[in-house]
Every structure is written in structure tokens, then in C-alpha cells.
Amino acid sequence: MPSAVRLSRLLVAAVLTGSLLGCGGGPSKPSLMANMAKEDLTVYQLRAMDYEYAAEFAQLVAACVNDIAEHTNDPLVKDHAYQWRMWAAPQARAAAFDQDPFAGLLELWALAGQQRRYFTEGGGKSSFGDQQERALDTTRHLEEEAERLAARVVPAEDFERMTENLRKWVDNHPIEGQLYVRPTARADLAGLVPEASHGGLKAVGSMEETLRDLTDRMTILTVQMPVEARWQAEYLTHHLFEERVQEPADSIVDAMGEMTDFLGEFEPTLAAQTTALLDGFARERVAVFDAVGEERTEILAAIEEERTSIMNKLDAQLISATAELDNVGRGLIDHFFVRLIEVLAVAGVVMILTVLLVLVVLRKRGRSDD
Image (tube, rainbow, N blue to C red):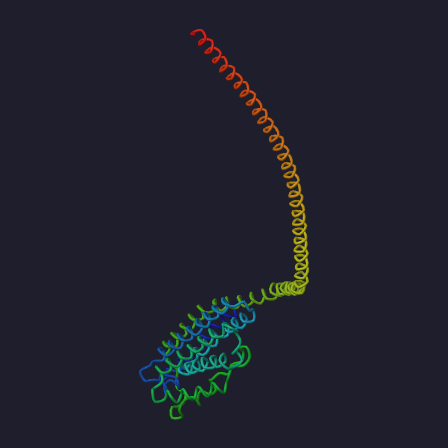
């Protein structure tokens, strides 16, 4: 801790010394800004624009990384996203902290172009899998913002040429590896601006401007350092999870995959066994139905035979009863007619006797009358 405080004091003392030396009558703008930026733009205004863009650069990249991590389950994609987030903020801040704010603007512009090219056609074009389009949208937006910022600062007659020079430089100086090796534009800034605009070394601003810039930088670092420390912790936690949890989980998944393969091979055998069992059930069912049908046919035949036998017996008894009744009826009729004949015979005798009696009585009365 004492060494850090001593280093901070030495840094402040060096800045103050440089500021005091620079106040000795030279122009207030650094070299590139004095020759290339618009006249009405102050050093503090351009630095504020650089700081604001660098903060936006870090925030948009962080938001994009959060979206990618939320929408993917691939640990390698998350690893690349976390590396991008940890790399982007320091790169943008280092560019914005350049002593010449115009040089810082050019460095931010080159950084945005390099980043866009890296994810479009460079080594990071497949870093995020199906989430790649999110990164491309963010990098394109940041490059467009850098160009709009440069258009506000650079005179119109120089802007088109600078844009062409910067794009050529970006094409010749791509980012290499997993966002670890990035050529900076500081060594080539002279080639990015027109030769007529080159000038000698100009002095820095006043002591007040230097102190104000130092305060701004300390404020930015105070705000961003805890966030970047949290990003580092999140990245380490991700790696710890991948090593301690993800690998055992992968082994479990592999075991389950082998089990699935075994079940896939066992499935045809099980299906064949099931089919054979169902066929056996079907055959047994048909045999049972056939046996039941035969038994039913035999039962119906026996019932029909028994019914026929009973009906024959009933018919025989009916015929016998009918014959007996016929005989009885005929006997009764014969007896009736015999009795009727006897009655009629008796009645005829009685009538004959009566007639004879009447005739005798009449004859005797006739004789007595004589």
C-alpha cells in the first residue's frame, strides 16, 4: 500500500511538472489536435467526448456479453464472451487516456474498426456460435458511433481522406488470437492524417486543465475498476465451475449417452420380444375364441337335440291324448245315440199305447152310446 501511494504521488508530481513546463507560452492544444481538429473545439471538450465514447464502448460490450451468456449453454462461447468483455474496457480506456485527445480519438476509431473486422472476418468470426450476430450488431454500432464522433471533430475536407487511410490501416493490422494481440495506431498516426497537417510538438494545456483531466481520469478509474474486478471474478468462477462441476457433469452426460446408446440397441430386441408376445397373445386369443365357438356349437346342437326329443315326446303324448279323447268322445256319442234311440223307442211305445188306449176308450164310448 505505501508503494502504491508513493507511485500515485510521483504520478501527480510528474503531471504537475509537465503542466508547469507547458505553460511557458506555447499553444494550449497538443500537436495532432492543434493541426487537425476544428478550431472551436477545446481540449477538455474533445477529452470528454473520448471518455464518454470509451465508457459507452465498455457498457455496450458488457451488455452484449450478458445477452450472449444468457442465451447460450456452451461454456466455450461464454468463455470467449467473458474474455471479450475483460479486454474491451481497458483497451477503450487506454485509447481515451492519450495525452493528445485527437490521437485518442483516432485510436478509439481504429479500435472499433479492428474489433468489427475481427468478429466479421477475422479470428473471432465464429467465437459465439449462434449468438455471433449479437456481437456483430454491437461492433458495427460502435464503429458507426466512432465515425460520427470523428465527423464532428475533423473538418469536412479532411474527413473522407482520414476515413480511407484508417480503414486501410485496420485491414493491414488485424487483431490476432483471442483478443490478446492488438496492434495500436499510435506508431502510425502520422500516416493517418494529411502531411500538410503535421506540425511540431506542441505544449500541453494549462495546469488547471491538466488537474481537471487528472480528476476525470481518477473518477473513471474509480467507477470502472470495481466493475472490471467483478468481471474478473465472474470469469474465474466460470472457469472454476467448468473444471470442478462441468467436467463431472460431462462425464455423467457421457455415461447417460452410453446408456442411451445401449437402450437404442436394446430397443429393437425389446420390440421383437414385445411383438412375439403380442402375436402369442393374439394366437391364444384366437384359439380361445375358436374353442368357445366350438363349445357353443356343441351346446347349441345338444340343446337342439334335447328340444327335438322333448318335442317328439310331447307330440307323442299329444297324439295319444288326442286318440284317447277321440275314443272317449266316440264312446260318449255312441252311448248318447243308444240312449236316445232307447228313449225314442220307449216314447214310441208309449205313444202307440196311448193311441190304442184312446181308440179303445173311444170304441167303448161308442158302444155305450149305441
